[in-house]
Length: 360
Image 1 (cartoon, helix red, strand yellow):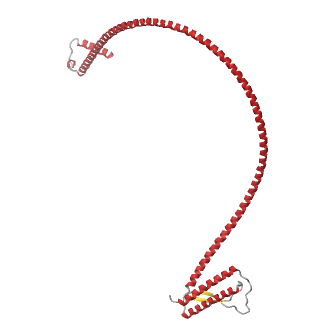
Image 2 (tube, rainbow, N blue to C red):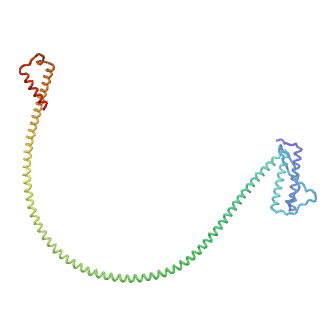
Image 3 (tube, rainbow, N blue to C red):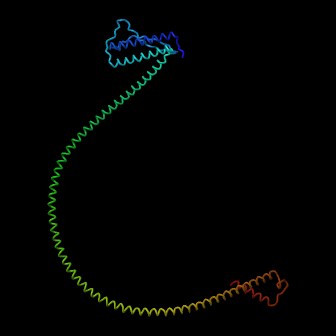
C-alpha cells in the first residue's frame, strides 16, 4: 500500500515519535530514581499534528521543563498511582514505538487506530462495568435498607416473643400452682371415692348375699313344686292314655260305620248315575225329535211363504199386463170390441183382490 506522505515527512514523524519514546523512557527512569511524582505539575508537552489522508491526528510529545526555576511541588504519590502511571507510560511508549516503526516501513499508522479502537472498547467495557457496579451498589444499598428493616422487624418480633415468653412463664407458674392444688384435690377426692366405693361394695355384697339366700330358698320351693307338678302330670298322663285308648276304639267303630255308609252312598251314586244317563239318552232322543219337527215346520213355512210370494207376484204381473192392454187397447180390450159376458165381473173381482194384496 502506497504511503500518503513523502518519505522525508515519514522520517520526520518517525524521528519525533522515537524522541517521544526516549523521553518517556527517561521519565520512567527519573520516576524510579526519585520515587516521587507530582500530579499537579508534569513535564511540558508538545502537540504535533499528523495528517492521515483526510484525518488529522494530534500527538502530544513530552518536552523538558521550561526554565530552571520550574520545580514541581512536593507531593508524595501513593504506590497505586505510581504503578498506574508506570503502566500507562509503558503502554504509550509501546504504542508510539509501534507507530514509528509502521511509519518507517509502510508510511501508515493503522496500529495507532487499532489501539485507539481497542482502548475505546476497553473504556466502554470499563464504563459498563462501572455502571453495573453502581447498579450493584444501589441494589446492595436497597438490600441493606431492606435488611435493616428486616432486622428492625425481627428485633420487634423478638421483643414481642420475649414478652410472650415472660407472659407464658407467668402462666406456667400459675398453672403449676393450680396443678398442685388440683393434684391435692384429686388425691383427696380419690381417697374419698375409694372409701365411699368400699362402703358401697360392702353394702352391695351384703345385698347380694341376702339375694343368694333368697334365691336358694326359692330354688328349694321350685324343686318341691316341680316334684308335685311331675306327679300331677304323670297322673294326668295316665288318664289321657286311657282316654286315648277309648277314643281310638270309638274312632275304629265310627270309621267302620262311616265306611259302610260311604259304600252305600257309592252304590246309590252308581245307580243314580245309570238312571241319569238313561234320562239323558231319553232327553237327547226327545230333543232330536223336537228339532226334526221344528225343521220340518220351518221348511213348510218357507215353502208356504215362497208359494205366497210367487202367487202375489203372478197376480201383480197379470194386473200390470191387463192394465197395459187396457191402456194400449190391445187384444180383446181394443176399441169397438166387447168383452165376453161376465168378464166385467171377473175383472172387478181381480182388481179387488189386487188391492187387498197391496194393503197386506
